[in-house]
Length: 357
Image (cartoon, rainbow, N blue to C red):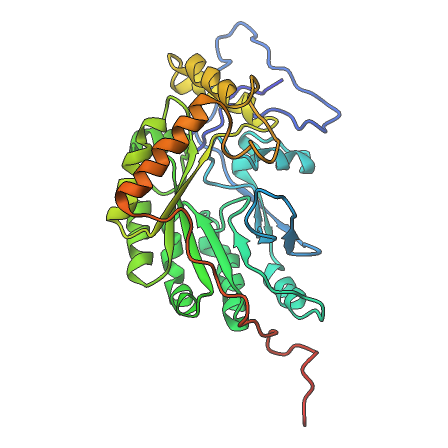
């Protein structure tokens, strides 16, 4: 059962359900004192140091356009209620609810490991994705600077990178990304769910505002970095009407591509999202979930490769048609230019490079 807590400042989840692997399960009971929904309005963020064994994750999923990714952090302070990465916190016996937003892991040895992995004799360079799971520019990056360190290594090695973020903190690294982009090594996607600042503050409480993300798009574009806007996720009833408006805003701020993904609710995310709907938009909750099930073959989630990102059915087809028309109207591409993987060189100090002296 979920531990009900009520809304907390800076958090989207309204409960903290136990890990599905936990041997103990908690159940919240009303003791009659009327304080079931009460609780502190703030929740301190705890950061654990994680010593990773490897840093580059690899996948062969047919619907994911990259083979390699790096996630320097587990959990995410942005707190997006719809985040498909939430269930991964259960592997640490933590909740995908509030724990995911406030109990974080930082892989302190990420940069060191990256150097070692890029120096291996059999390493085959292909684009590395940052932001495939949790946001590489979430607030703790300001102090930890792991993403910055990773980019420094990739720039040194001439290694291609694809970044997805909803944070304006990426502007800090323009000095690295702009030269990489000149060599065809870097491209960036800025994720925008809605242009409604109030709705965004509830869906994504610690992410940059929609207006601030658009400013980041402009800054990246002005710096010569290929930048696109990912309309993600498209939430039926709540945000789908904004599809064309977000594409238009992307063009106005210098984006050269746009794409979209439909909301998916794997494992515990379905329960958490349903709780969020009841808390913040109760009159629309049933309609939203009904439309999600329409997209997912009657369920809240469909994990099949061909359908998990776009959905299926009449509504999914209509979204795709509307999006295609918006791209055509504004002359936008559906993807960014490919990055260059032939400029790779091993890290400095690589043991494969023999010294003459």
